[in-house]
Image: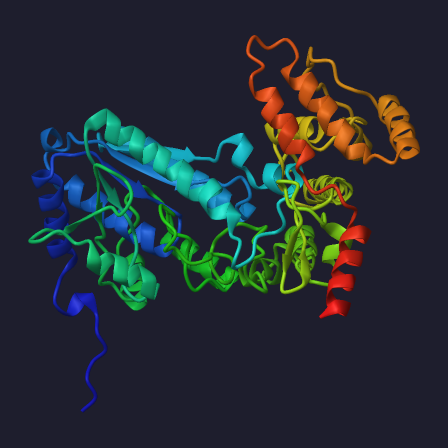
Length: 468
């Protein structure tokens, strides 16, 4: 006779799990921080905790429970709408029922957002060996919130809706840091933070069995969540990311619509196939980004130097650096065009794929670090979206005409225009400062950058190869 498949409910009832949650809550007199992604696992954890705490008398529900979701500003719009709607309902019902839940969206700092790094600084589209986005956009914002609450209250308990088997790396982390005779684990990197994983032993079937049998206490619709999974072909979700053990979310998981770490975005393709046709421009933009990872396209889109101004040669091959300013301008045009298409074809005419703060930051980076003396961002925006007011800066910037004059002089003298432009920008940025001690070292750094052209670098490579 075949053995019945494992299920948490073969040995424990929801009431048993409620009692465990109540014990952890009451015995560890600390605030909780729940990571909520809107997916099935974090919804199950949150729902169990809600029901467990609701069974306690109001005077015992005295430790706040902070419910945080990560908004990278490039989340799939359908998922963002679902999560924000859920958080609004939770906040309202929690207030009415005197439950200790407080909701918050954590976002990256403007200088750390996807578009500021990709279009502003020229970081190439993320890939497996260079996932620069995860730390900036997910780990740091979540950790800032957790550390802030730990500082305010002394210690916090971080509740994660993670399950065994989701990731072998995560399984190792879960087992290595469990405290003796406790349901809590010490967080690997966050001081004064402990981790509780109430659904760690649930199977996928357990999760769905629970969600479809227990009504949402905040008035949500778990059948709608199931439909969302079916429409996105989602096999998992993006849990709250607080360390590097979390796997990429871009394949068949809820995640960023810009994710290029995986080959195909099955979640977005599933949404489009199931009626969300207005998202097609997003998928096309994402695929366009992914194509820039093709080695054949790197010479067309990437600088031959790294961001530090140095040339890197590996195995006798040139390693390309960030996107060129020219290509970044193309990306901004394409992004704003995509935004216009989505506004016209979708159900949200005011949707913003890029914020005003990000546009201002990109403009500043281009002008001060990438010698965009033409001040192109407002021009691109006006061409595609329309005129708008921009932040007025009292700092004197060089103009497009200045760049033309400088280029003519540098060409005549055989000096790289960008070298002199960088020196001028450095002087301008430090002009008027009380302490200018750093200017000499900065000038020295600029002179020590590799100012050879790509043609000169390749010629040197060819010469070296011919002598071997």
